Length: 369
Figure 1 (cartoon, rainbow, N blue to C red):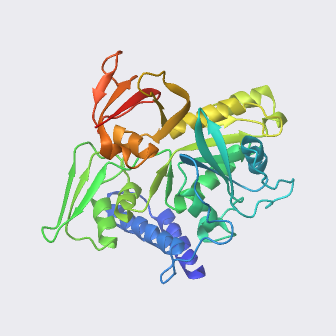
Figure 2 (cartoon, helix red, strand yellow):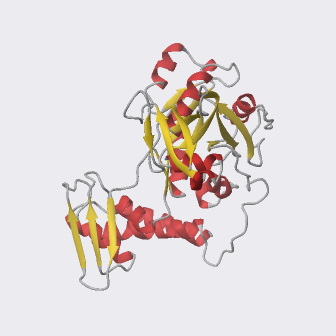
Figure 3 (cartoon, one colour):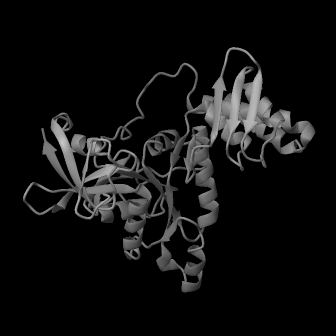
């Protein structure tokens, strides 16, 4: 493990001393690819078995989506978790109170959301320090990450935690790069770009491809600000793109003027878990970032049932998905569905098939064959 960490440090040091210019583009691309491969080796050591994540890290999934609380020890994650869900997560003023992943459930707008209180991570977690690798491995599987920060030192801790998650292949509040790399048997490297490249040139690209031993490929770039790191992410293929909210805790310890400054941090919600301030804004932000779709059922001849929505994930919210969420056999027996709401063309309702995509708060009546 130490040799891989040392290798990473050496590559980073060489990158820091290498001046970026036309002559060094290829070499820098090569170094960035070497760095990504070394980090992958650190996360997934060669010859490692498929062992579990250790005690407390194999969490049974419940609810329609999961939110992971990530942060340094003693930032108030456990207090927030306990009050939100009613699930006891050990809490105290000293560090490392939570030693396992503690699951709980919070219902937001009728949707059950699983909340995971992850043990506090320390700087160097992605390099194997503490139990950071298991913690971040669970974070990779979440639909939303809450990075819980102490308001007295938010920006420094934010930067360190982002670096730890990035090192483990988690990309926060980003979309997958608009880059495709299609390998072929012969013909060399062909690079096409439909937009001007501002942070990447052909030498960068060839340097990265060379390190991955790719000598025949078509590379298409459709992203103006694409970087060598984006290209590496596409080649590695194991990155996850997760929305993130920065929860700035302990605002009861600062002034109103300082609070105004905190609101300038993008995707942040200042709260006090001890005094229970601003929690409504936090749960609304959670709902907005999860981007879930509530669908209400309407039995024939009756009013819609608004008490128990069927909750679907955006991108998997067709009539077929709706049927499967109720029972696997319903889709096979479906003749058509009538939909009322924003996805319907008419206010009086629209007859649709199984591929119709539903929107939040639509009402659906199913008609069997």
